[in-house]
Length: 295
Length: 165
Image (cartoon, each protein chain N blue to C red):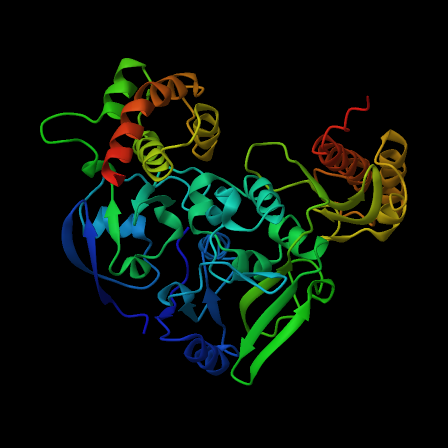
């Protein structure tokens, strides 16, 4: 349970880190952020690094900010940042807070990072789900300069991304959400803090009782979190009620291609798809303001 | 280099310089190089929480940090919890509420609870109970750990608020 030997490099800037990674990536140099997934994988000897380039040595990569109509999350932003509901402007702040509570456990959230979670790309990553659902933009840096990737193009299969080995994830940009947004999140796992077997995030723009735009993201079911357009189409133009919620859940169950493993069948995950989408939409409906009283 | 490098960190208020290879975890460095064996090493991959210590005021798994990453950090271990000649409120509450049996997980729980309440004094009792799911105890069934945490929480919150004021 000890990692294999490696060398350790403390960069002086992001540019220095990118150059060091360019020089060492072919041999197996890796970037370490929070280390809450990478270090256990190294201890279990399923991940190896010839060198760790430690972003924790750099200042100024841990505080999110608003830029125009975007919320910018620098790579070292710890999950625990979102223990504060006001870390992002409402209603995005409440959404990020509500999701963050489901990421692992309190001490892991003190160290684990947004950028690390995106780069690790576990199918059950809550931040990958948020970024996919909101169509965020992922900013990368290599020795050649910066590059951006849209969330829909981020995954390259299970726990694999379109980031090149010599690129560093520097920031994720999420859109700020309008005031008429209703959101809901639901995650199912067998033990508190464990990896999600299934989870759904819905972000709806409302005009009165009616859904005018819908984003429904699903995680833990397929090999990477993504939006489910079939479920979204079932909601747009409808009131958010039992009928439309049921239609969205059914559409998603037909649309997904679930993973299968030794303890959880594809059929189980298909059923879970309907359950988590239903419960996320019900959570959104429960946030709707009470209807104005008519005289 | 994968050779030993010197690391200077503050442990329980005392500055120490130790020499470690990069792959040595903070947990092992505290036990072997600082000779502070109160921090227990259980699973070595972040699941059990027995190795929980405070780094710069936040409770973290010391098996998921390399010692080299603690350069310049303020580390607090279970040895730094008790005031001179006594026990902290939480340590006393663990005795009073029979919150330990074999005791292996106890240092991790003490640092988890103290760290969470010092960092977030506004944390509700319900959220504190949820935080206890971070660490594993195979003896007590948690009921008595919850009782001890809730019993000591007001005193820890009050001290944390005083320190922040």
